[in-house]
Image 1: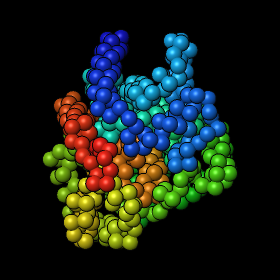
Image 2: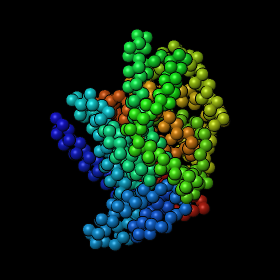
Image 3: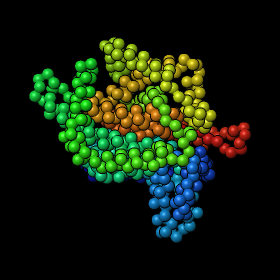
Image 4: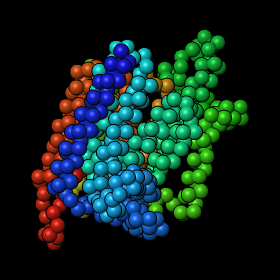
Length: 474
């Protein structure tokens, strides 16, 4: 059965790569020159192709992982085919590197799904394969396979690092985490998440050991009632665990590779005087709490086929009726955060080539009260998001939420690309959806991909003061 599953997966990988190559060819024919951020990435990669590793464009804000990986792939081709760097380090060839990363993402997603859902191994062959295929075509990620951006490589190494954590290969995971950070500095958050899962696992084990003999405290932390008493117990236990030398020592014996990466990253911040390299004027951190609400809404939309149904809505209404004061409190806090902590980046208001520009312009700017009227939708989206983790332990969920806050809230710019890794992590840890739901998800993703690629190719426009062709994109 496993051999048969392997054949099916290999065939789908090949088919997916063939279709992606055909789309890649069309996109490259229509947009032969560097576009958007490619005007910085492509020349920098070409400098590396020619061995000029000391030259750096100060407008680039990420570390050189993308360019180093590109050279690592392209240089052997130059030597084997006896070609010149000018031919091989073209825009098309550099973009093609991301298609290779996409193949890797598909394979890593499949392995993660197999690891996270082992109990369903004998009965979910088609579901696991379709789930991996669907997530590899996640629209925001899939679109950037056809341009020379950092997203494909960043996602591949982040997911690969997490896969190694699941397999207990923590040194390899930490090394792959370093690779992911070289693509995007904020991936240090997901390196921390890999370590945090080990801490959460140890906390779960300690909780069960300490409370197994107490008649009134047999519940695992994920099932402790949501109350002041339950919250107090969890907080006290967490503080006791994190301040216990024995527990800390036990965790460090396993998680020390991640600690080494963390210390190295802190040294980088001290030497670099910040997390951003190059131009920092447009990448200033702030407490943009509504980013979390935008992410919940984003996740609700893209997970509609697999997370939402009539019974889920009915369950929410019952929860609302059972705990009205709690939801009223959450709504009040949300209104306050929207009121006091909404930040709008200048790029969001000025660049009409990105889809978030139209989301903001036609939704949030319709009326000054529009952002407050969306709070009920945020509350439902947040509840739906958290409800997907009910099978996970509380400590794991808290670790994930802490990393999600760190990955989204400091970002001033509403940029859907920043949601790729958190969304994939969310979707991977949901209970395995049924086959009809997975088909619905794949149809949704395929439809969105077809629409966005068609719009990018066919719906061009020009700015009044610029003769260059402009295109719409994520």
